Length: 117
Picture: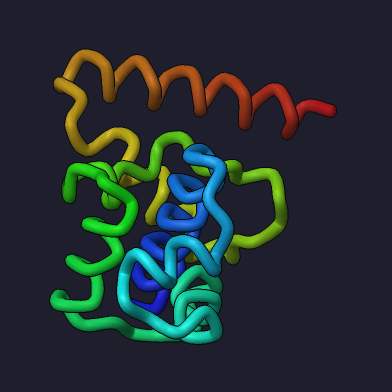
């Protein structure tokens, strides 16, 4: 569950930055302390649904977008192996069986290529 808390926090930060908002601005619009919001964005705070709703309103965002993790930058080194697996599963969860098989075949080819080197 810690990985979901971290993913949601990172997504909140990503949306906030895309809207060119500072933590202070979002905290004010959400009725939260800036330090509390910073902890949420780092994944250090396990927030309630009421707090999440305040943040969503402050961002003027659709709730479902908070749980859309496809665009998170996985190369920043923020993620541990378990969290990367969660991201991968989230990415393929809504794909059909044919697409999942294609992804699996591509991954197998990539791993076999690296194993050969």
